[in-house]
Length: 64
Image (cartoon, rainbow, N blue to C red):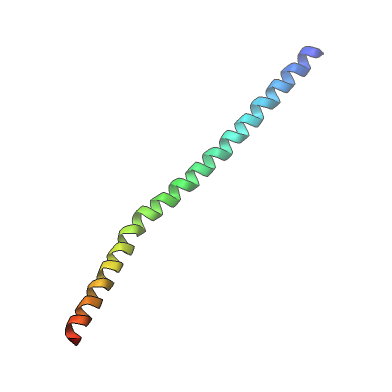
């Protein structure tokens, strides 16, 4: 009886650890997706900023 209780406790511990690892894996996968989106959109944002700055400088040059 005591051996069965120990085995059940050990199995519960292993199942809990497995659940924790699955949750951690899902968190990492979500973070990976976020980083991939940022990797795509960062150059777009920088390019837009450069074009806006260029347009502002040109408009100032045309006025003067």
